[in-house]
Length: 236
Image 1 (tube, one colour):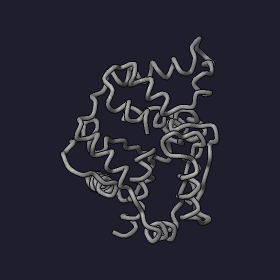
Image 2 (cartoon, helix red, strand yellow):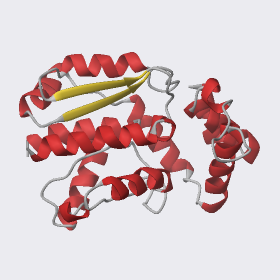
Image 3 (cartoon, rainbow, N blue to C red):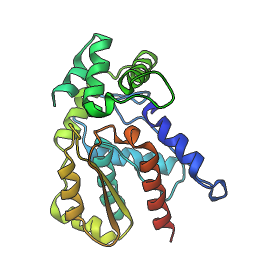
């Protein structure tokens, strides 16, 4: 959940208080404070987990924001609710903290971005983000092996048929798809493909051509504005 802290902070800062925004962040099964049972995990199963959590909170509806596997889960939720690489492996299996953090940086951010200087500190962006991810690594509980395996299976077996994608498109609710041109995990062309498959006036595709998988940090302010505009479209 700590990874969402900058996004949540900016949403709460930029959203009008009178509109009574409530934000829920949580750990998917297999990571953080959530149980990690052995067995095959699927994105549709995780979507049901979230719907169960919403039922527990008496939330009838919500804007769903997901990154990476979270985006896959959000697609599953859209359907279910309407109808009733090398650096990644090293970051998961390595034990040396330096190797883990450097692998995370390489996986999430383009080298051009990491080589820039911070505007308000005498540090490179790489060093600043290294410090952030190192602190997170030291202060959070690593996921158990069963959780890692479960997440890998969920991502590798994620699939929505054209019929299910068409059903999501026909539902008509505002859809925002964010793509990153230098994403080493999910290539930006896949975001464009998804937008084409669920095309319509209610679908918006925004591409950040020089962003990596860590787009939510690299373009934090811009992404927040994208989200807020999509929330407002849903309210109209």
